[in-house]
Amino acid sequence: MNIVESTKMAVKTLTANKLRSALTMLGIIIGNASVITMVGVGQGAQRYASEQFESLGPNVLFIIPGSEEAQNRTLDLPRTLTLEDAKAISSQVPTVSAVAPQLQTQQTLTYSNRRSTSLVMGTTPDFLTVRDFDVERGRFFSELDVQRNTQVVALGSDVARKFFGDAEPIGRQIRIRNLSFQVIGVMESKGAFLGNNQDDAVYIPITTMSSRITGNTSPYGTEVSFISVAARDEASVSAAEFQLRNLLRLRHKVTDEDDFTVRSQKDALEIVGNVTGALTLMLAAIAAISLFVGGIGIMNIMLVSVRERTHEIGLRKAIGASQQDILVQFMIEAIILSAIGGIIGTAIGAGGVMLVGATTPLKAGVSTAAIVLAVGVSGGIGLFFGVFPARQAAKLDPIVALRSA
Image (tube, rainbow, N blue to C red; front, side, top):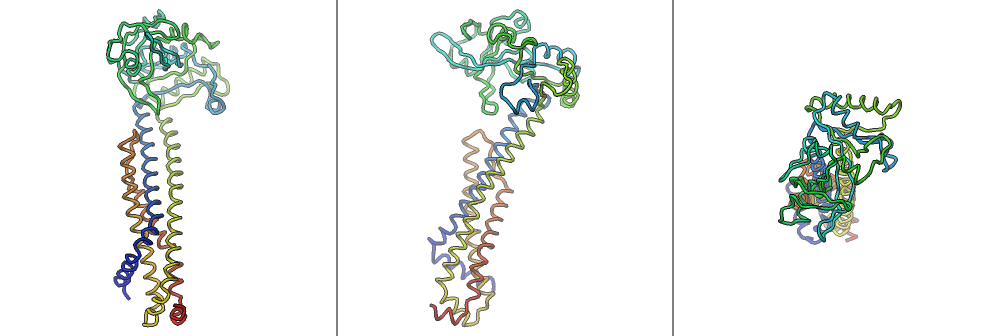
């Protein structure tokens, strides 16, 4: 019997038992859909995180207090970075174009009878340049405001909307920690960065922040939470990182382990890529378990089919069908079940990925590699788990099969 005849007979047999065939394919369908969806979502999360960091600009460096080991051991980081460090970097590192020290904390904001808790960030005018922020209306505070500890504030777009609605906030007074600040500007919307809403924040001069909001908490000078640095261009990033490391080591009299950490956009992207890549692999591995379960389902149903069709097998062998003919027919049935299940599962998985991409910020997309892998694996599973039932059927003695029937 040739392949075409065997295929026709396999299709006829499977369509005669539609419900059983559909239930047999269910495990493969769920497995394929899960693998494709999980891989697509994982890769979407990776692309989303990468785009978030790339929005910072390729020439931005972040200096964080505490060594890498200290950051891994505790959340209470040492207060080793100061405003004076930022000034030294600005004046003594030639490959740096702008420096923005940042001191931030959560505070309660009050206007009239409205209250809300938002991020209050003390910084300098260079913050706009380094972090690529823009003012939508009004102005940002100036260097003179920093020198005079002026009580002025630029509001994030969400904060402005929350307190003033459609009214003009410029010139109004808003209270931060029971201190009155004049609103001088509203920032252009920036959206979320890794889940943090950048528009739910307000910006004041860093000197005002340290003297009237947080107080001077560092024994080394005006404490800052971290320092953002913009290199002159992308080619200068490595040189800038080397120079500012050496400068801070000299200023902090470091002889052993650094009491600060320098991160570049490239470092952040690498860390995020490793984390999201591992997460994607884990999700795909978990989803692949259902493919294995689907394969066991195919083997189980095929074994039942062999028992039910003992008379048919005995009759075919009695009129001249070889073991290979019987083996091929049952193998084809298993492959058809897994292939159709794989195709349906792929369609469902692709639809799930597109739904996630349309309804969430994740840049989810259908991965061709995931489709090829899932369909190939499902076909291989059908072949693998179909071998044992097919061999059982092929080995049946025709006389015994006819008698047992």
